[in-house]
Length: 200
Length: 195
Image 1: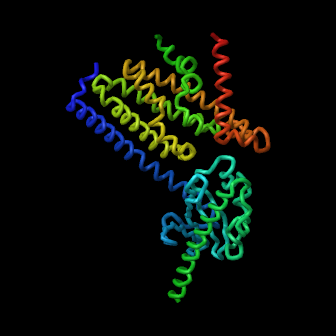
Image 2 (image 1 turned 45 degrees about the vertical axis):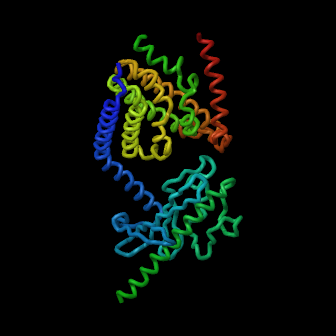
Image 3 (image 1 turned 180 degrees about the horizontal axis):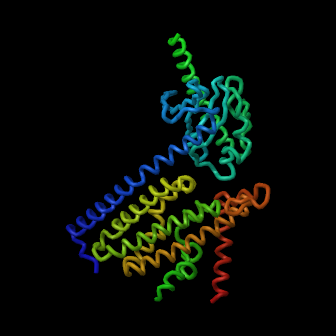
């Protein structure tokens, strides 16, 4: 039968249960930390190789951070034979229908968008999730476009982007994230140009 | 009650979804496809079996006034372990189920079985009860997910059988209620017939 509910008994019981639970969690955390990191890195690498032109370096190892508009973005440079061939920018927005959307946007060195990939989202299945490549042609329209002459706004807002039917909020959020990525890319490229000048 | 009975009871007579109507939040939220339903069901079953066992083992030492917080800590520990394991080995599924994995902690099926069964029965019986209820939950969620996927996305277990979009409403929240309602009627009709 259960013990009497005295203060001492209750404190001892709760303390020992929480202690055992946290010890157990610690062990599992330590055991799974490796595989979790590997899985995440694999996912990032997968997205990078999808969005930038062919490269032969390890972009994850050379990643750096850029601050734009008070938020910090991670940039993965893709190099081939030592030359930078493109940048993959991990961009995000909180304006999605289901909250945060994280994108990987790849730029060629001439500033055109090579490709985009969705890293994580919480959009409605069947509606907003059509932004994922392969589920609709929405993301395809960004490929090969240079944001300098391709207005990253949905047509409703006076831009050049065909919104996903019935998912204007998602489409706007997607454009917003791509725009941030573009701004970050410009920052990277500026630095690049300056460095080349300094080298000479 | 025989051991086998303990298992089958959870699948038919006390099916958590179609008879007890417990755990409706993950049921309606995650069953956008058969695979998601199956994954959610198995995740809940895993937690249910382990927490049932642990709770029946410690029930004798827990003072009545702190039993709910104690059970919740035990359940939360197992859910977090599950979360780590899924993140490490099935990252795709982990992402699809998202918020519903941590929410298993407050799934009324798990706490309900702890309170109604595990705290009063032996470890083996509690394990079997967890297995039975878990299987019932998994089966229900898979069926509901399958129905919604077939009607909503015109596919089954991710394989398209008709080219086209399907009836979108079944993938969205209202479709979950509609599909669940009809499945409830069907299940209970069949159940009375068998009797």
